[in-house]
Image (cartoon, rainbow, N blue to C red; front, side):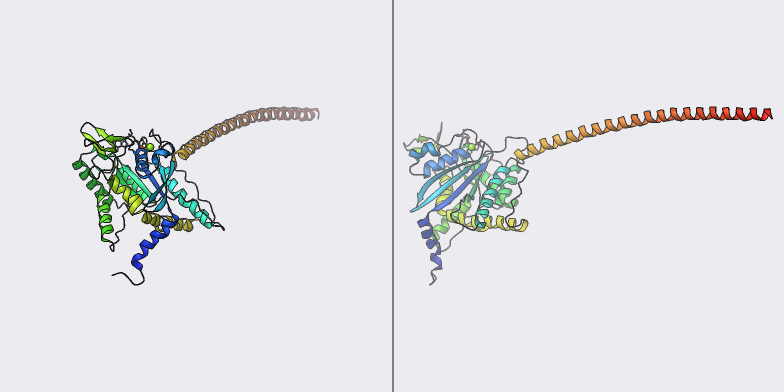
Amino acid sequence: MSSPIGISHLPEQRRKIVSKRGASFTLMVCGESGLGKTTFVNTLFSTSVKSYADNKRRHAKQTSQTVEIEVSKAELEERGFKIRLTVVDTPGFGDYVNNREAWTPIVEFIDDQHESYMIQEQQPHRGEKIDMRVHACLYFIRPTGHSLKPLDVEVMKKLSSRVNLIPVIAKADTLSPENLAGFKTRIREVITAQNIKVYCPPIEEDDPEMAAQARDLIASMPYSVIGSETDVQTSDGRVVKGRQYLWGVAEVENENHCDFVKLRDLLIRVDMLDLVHSTEEQHYEAYRQQQMETRKFGEARPRKLDNPKFKEEEEALKRLFTEQVKAEEKRFRQWEQNLIAERDRLNKDLEKIQDSIHATQLKIDAHANNSIGRSHAKR
Ligand SMILES: Nc1nc2c(ncn2[C@@H]2O[C@H](COP(=O)(O)OP(=O)(O)OP(=O)(O)O)[C@@H](O)[C@H]2O)c(=O)[nH]1
Ligand SMILES: [Mg+2]
């Protein structure tokens, strides 16, 4: 039974308020290189943005290796309200022997957006704010069919404390359905065992249909995806976004082939508002509190030196410093040697002078003795 004060209608009211103003939503993709992150972004735009064909030039990004963080924007309309969608594409990591710090720029990007929003909030005139806080971060997992790698675990942990983390199995078309099912189970087990906090859609029990959909979404995590920028023809004559193989077509929007549709529903249909609110209430709030506790009001955030770029500079500076110290030490030793040599030379001179003084003294004494001897003899 619905409450007389209409609490059960609150989500609907919230939707109405938002539908008037429209919503801004920022999605980030990250993970090892070559897993199809950029292709996924293009696929999402091409299957979600109505006038995509006209805007293709604006949105379609090169799927050559992404080398820096790239931001693209599009506007879409869902159930009557406008969504300003921003997608943050990041360079893949995992190409280097030392991967440990390769994902630091991603974590810093997320922190920087929270920081920038916090500074804007602290200004006396808090007008329209530029808000690029990341509402959802898709973490792409390599379709090895085995399990999560230690690097995945480490990065996912770092991300999950800052952002709504949504794990995604890349290139689902490269795994057989059985392999994919086993892979999913093992990933879920590692996520639980390692206590990684992934995003969990809320279940609104007062709407059985929505609750069932939420349960289905929760059960499908991690979401398997297929990305494709080309239209292909299926054996039954349909033209779809997909990847053509000798055996047939792997379809992006076919729920039997992958979870792309489920993931898109979660992101821009069912849970967008919850992702926005949980970012504000949990992740931004956690960042704000942590900064307030460790910094004075208005004080700038110290830049971290663990960015690989800064690390290199730091190493070069350290080397330069060590070389300069060594050169100075050498110069000092030389100067010390010169001083010792000079002291020895002076000592020798002094000795010579003392010797000659001594000799002269002896001569004087001898001369004096002689004169006394002579005067005695005279008497
Ligand atoms: N089989 C298969 N290949 C894919 C899929 N998605 C992308 N690819 C291919 O994988 C290659 C890399 O795709 P990108 O989208 O550039 O990958 P990325 O993750 O953005 O790579 P970086 O920017 O280097 O990190 C391309 O040749 C894509 O065509 C997929 O779902 N299945
Ligand atoms: Mg890329």
